[in-house]
Amino acid sequence: MPYPGELASKAAHAEIIRNPDVTAFLQECNYLTPPSDEECQAVAARFVPPLSAQVRTPAFVIAVDGSNHESSIDDKLPSTKIGYIKIGAVLIDLQQYGSLKVGKYVDPFRVAELQNQASALAFSIPSANIRWGNQPTVRESLRAWIDQQFYGPRTRFNAADPTTSLRSTLFHLAARRPGGLGTGDPYRLKIHKCPQCGNGPVELEDVPEQQYCPFCGAEVYPTDCLRVWEEAQEYQSNGVVMSRLMLILEHLVPFHYMRFLFKTAPLALSEMAFFVDGPLAIFGTAAWLHRSFMIFLQEVNRKLAKHGCHPLLMIGLQKTGQIVDHVSLIERHVSNDRLLAVDDEYRYKYILAGREPSRGGFGFETYYGQDLIYKTPTGRIFVFALPYPYPSKDEPGVDFVEEKVQFGHYPQLPTAIALINQLESDLYKNAVVPIALAHRYTAISLEPGGKVLDLLTRRALNA
Ligand SMILES: [Zn+2]
Image (cartoon, rainbow, N blue to C red):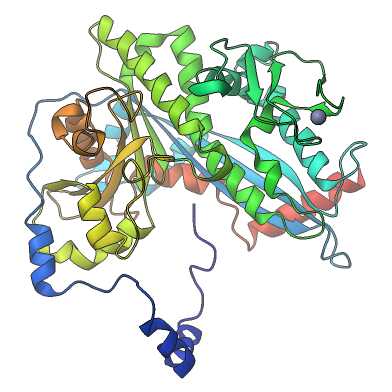
């Protein structure tokens, strides 16, 4: 996922910094400053060589990455907008991948051929000034449309079976939600309140029929539980909703695959690795999902362990963000083949300087995985995350803040490192081949790809 504004003009940036009002303002602010050489050396000393272990890397990798785009439906109607979200998934057979390497390098032409084994899930979104069906507002249109897309045959592993839809996966996850909003029944979920009258919670079933609020009779949808509708705008761009939904989908889609495999061929999960883009965390209104993910992963791993199989490997790989920025400052001081688990003390001291530590530890309400920094034997540096080894952060008798950074709790760590070493590439900075491919497959560049989408939008709406 690229960040908007990444390519903003450097000249404009310098001009802002030189402005005397801005200089005075900055003097009153707390923000991260580049560490001194001594500090860098102290930081580098915390990195340790990773435990060496004989591991077998998984047979398959599934990498997921998303992108989004918003366009006006007509040049004469610039404020009437529709959005697209694309989630790409690439499946790579690592045996086949081995044959792609020519000496130290990966053959880009043969990598390109792998893209034939990719699939993309595209979601369109009514964004501003567009209503769908008979819905009275953009917000209502958005809710109805998101639900239909989650339920639709395109998200199903078996088009004829609605229980294989992405919406059913959401039911399975929401049922595991701890506290009063969980149901314990994978065919029922609760939305915290009715978006129309505000009463709640409202319990819904995994059925094709339209369901209604028992308090006011308004239409309610299972996907309302993601609460993306709360940020919907009627007349302005819904870029916030789109990026929120895209980030949710980047995590939901791998869990959708996992749920399907867990049901049909559970032991196969120990032969797979899932790569997602960014930290293992869900921010904003759907942050509750992170707890369901933790619980689901625990169930999967318990079953795999019972059969003597390796735990499932899921890796969040960060290409940008605060840790990546921090790493670029200290990188040259760190020796090759070194690893660090980012603990809270380190994070609040060097990465989030000036921020108040959060209750219960960093990311208590949002993260389901631990961030690690790894410098490979060839000197490339990766920021990645592995799922926490517990189903909850307040396990009795467990000091989670301490425990989450103990390498020994992550049996998948040696495999993750071996896999990163195997998949690192000269082609893509800070990325491994599968995630770069997933990204390339979904990438909607503003030019000229975006133009194609603009044309499609117009054609779809005129049809
Ligand atoms: Zn209601």
